[in-house]
Length: 363
Image 1: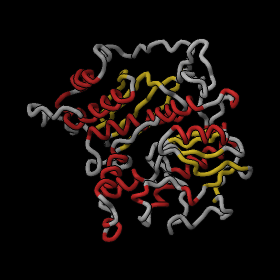
Image 2: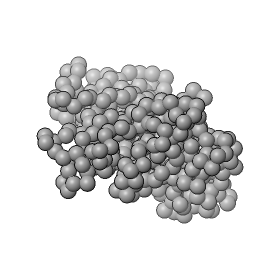
Image 3: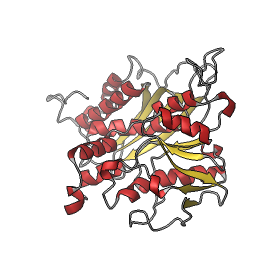
Image 4: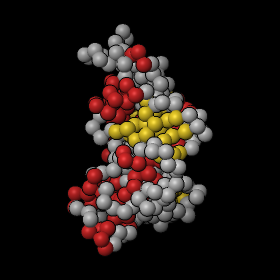
């Protein structure tokens, strides 16, 4: 965890520090000398493509002081970007850049906590703080750019994962690479992050709150505050591929919700998607909540991977990756349309709350 604030500096604001002192202090969260120049030098990735993504967290929309401590803001911002790298098939993180916007009255300990959370996430998943920028503004936001690479293939390595010690070749995971007949596999439970947010905001009252045991509360709050980018799932995906199948994986992460992920894969792949309402990936302890199915489908910020795979590969991945399960299938039909595998149209019926399609930043 981040070090506790120094009492001598606990009252300092960004206005007190000024830009250059702020940059000097932020340099402590990066490798020595990393903040000394106007740009960062990246290590060579040889013949491995470099994958780049950018994501923004805005106060009042993605986090607030009432639900998220400063260190958790830094962790979540980093993890969200690293999740996008995993969703593209990366297994290694090169590093990140961070642009911070904050009002001049922002206390230094809050910024220190944010960068402490960023450092924790990078220590857990790899990569370094490469640099960034800072500016004053009306509200706090973090814009992070993350860089990653695919797995390196060992020279002469076997590509049949059934052979002991084999190193399978890998490639990109892209939304457009699904095909009718592919199974939709998700790598873990959905709805926990939304439950965690509901608990932190005091949304649950009476009977709903009484259904929750302490361990579920703890898991849900942890899922919301400290999501995990699923690089382990990508490694399992690589390890379970049989060479005869070739590399073709449709997929994305579920940051905007399970239903949104399935629809996005289907739309990009020119398919429809059917989900199995009896196989929704719920944490069993929250299944009794009236909101459970709706939060599973559309709560968002679960940061699991949703993958479109040929059935033999899907079966092998599920056997190798605890928590992974089949949630539906891609079928021929209107691109991006959703339906239920029992033939029912997409619509009301998810826990009595309708069938949401996911989070919209401008909805």
